[in-house]
Length: 586
Image 1 (cartoon, one colour):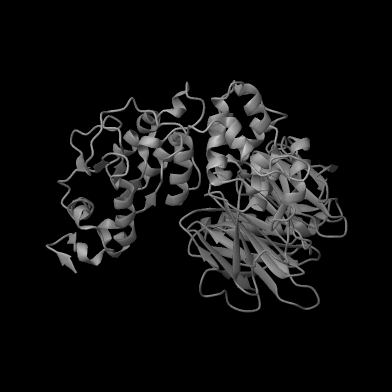
Image 2 (image 1 turned 45 degrees about the vertical axis):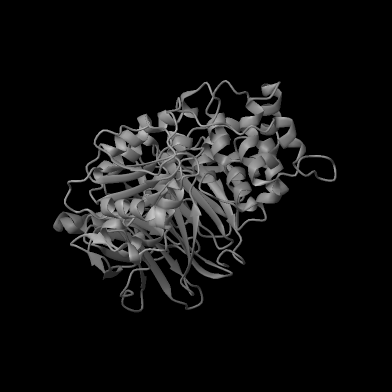
């Protein structure tokens, strides 16, 4: 039920105190206005305790019931810097964690109307008080004002500082108790560092047990350490404690470690920087935070990684090795008993690596001037490459070259005849010498790499070009699964003895960057990497999905029957072990 043409009836919202109803109605009128005559910024002002946050929470509770009041993101700004605010806003809008500049660019290209709520903007800021990141005005200047310059975005912002955002032309909801303008900095927690630290429970050997510390102690002790009599020693003690890194405020740690003046043990700054976009994503489970930080430390800070390993191994997945200085463009698990990976670096060189350790195993001779973007391996010496030009190329000893050469020639000839037959994707089977080729038309072509096959088994699966593909042949007469992703964000399953499934396995408004599949003790598993920094693991028999965060850009995936998942991209090569027995549990 609505009042007039656009304004929702306040009676359809949750109950609101009588003295707040006029403010609530004003907020509804502003949000639901479709004429474009009202300002795109609504400022909620008032003294401490006047009910600004409560009014935003009330609005949010009923907002989904009216098209103009649907809230697309709510980012409480207390303790956030411009960077951590941008990460959270990017996550809520579905882009993944992005820097402020990349977020502004991404929203600028997203033409959908957006409504944003920002509680506690006047309490934004973190880190050393003498740096701009500690000042709420920095969030306003670097992010909020640029966001409000985008014509498709509207925002309701809570502020106790009348000068934080320009009031000229804004909708003002003043909840009373006006106080004099402040210089813009949020008041810090006043409890002394020694008192906060003394209140933290201890382990049997006398160390702080941060898993049992109070919420205020975890949130404020870094600020208190910066005010301590010996701030360098206080901060150093916290940063050297892996328990605090796992349980302390991730946003406060991110702001502190952004200050290059702060000395850190080992390579903590680099490790934290790698994990921070996910550590700040409200991961409250200690094993998950430990797993994220451990994954960032493996291959970079071995001492920290070893400290974190026991707790990280309690999580659903655990990093096992890393090659951070090895940019990878293409990756494939090699069928057979050798448990090796084939990888192409960004210069086109092909090498093999041991799956269990990531150590180099051998060099594969490859054609010069080739830049593979996908691989399908027959063994450690024979494989099919998809070059960045869309050309299939065989790499094999002379006695194996005929089979792979025939596949390359088949698709090369087809592309010359029909532009739609241009190859756009190539994938293999980690356990059997099979390969699947995807093309611009949306068709898939399944080949055996182990014997001569005149023509592939083919099927039109997508309406748009195929971006990624993988296949899985179940041994002993079982089915053969082909998984593929297209330019429209759909991921589909084709069991080759039947027609493709009528509905996608998954459909998202993002691009798939890599696929991998394996037949594991838990059954067939599909891994899907997305452009918004998410990795989805599908248990194919049950249709259950588990989302994992990606700490690194992913251009290639490999998955083994033992549950080892290898991620390759411009940041290097990384392997995690999945706990297949618990991965899909609630």
